[in-house]
Length: 313
Image (cartoon, rainbow, N blue to C red; front, side, top):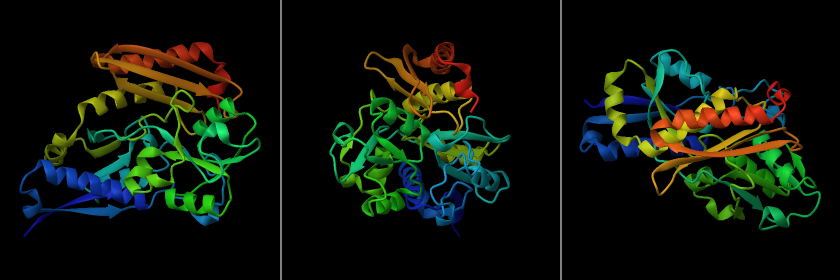
């Protein structure tokens, strides 16, 4: 009789594809495991899952925070309902619940954002007053900082829902993560990929993390071989930035760390007001073994440059 391992995930089409990706990676690195073990994907509804009843209310209006998309999954993991869980790391709180840790991170996909629009190929080409739909304060702040003449309107739902709303002309354009669009196989919907100098990605965007119970030696053994060290290093730096800035859904914060050809860690970071009227961006470089220190240093630089009320939300 086959052993069953239960992998918890959100139930959106993208989340299910991401869980399938993790499952196949585990099977790939463990020869013969598929013959003796079934990895069963368990969809779990979370507080952050959009429903039509919510309309286009923002995360803040419905009490959202950085645990919005993970709370119920983490509770199921802690209770033993599932054996491990996969999360989009950009949605994960920088504070792990007691007894839970991230045992592996899959190699990062493209971390950038993309413009989707039927009326313009690039952000620069959108006409004055065009409606850009997004529920992300980070995207809103950077779009308005770059193009204050645009109108940013709330647009919620999973990728499929937002594409339908865009097709129904509820907005003239929207911004979505390249990684999610690629995983769903709808990258042909991309009008253009946004330069990170214009729109810096969310912390840990494009990274899938596998969360386990800290004392579960067996599951740790199964997932450790799929951990990508470079991705783990970049996530550590970016999440340190977010932790020091006390990042939630209330303050637009962005960060992107990358390992350079010379073997160092380079990172860009920013914080802003949601309306884009005030935006501070910093950059730094350091040793890869000091990734967390680099993130913390950039956070301190930002704190020294911005008014404290930006973080009071």
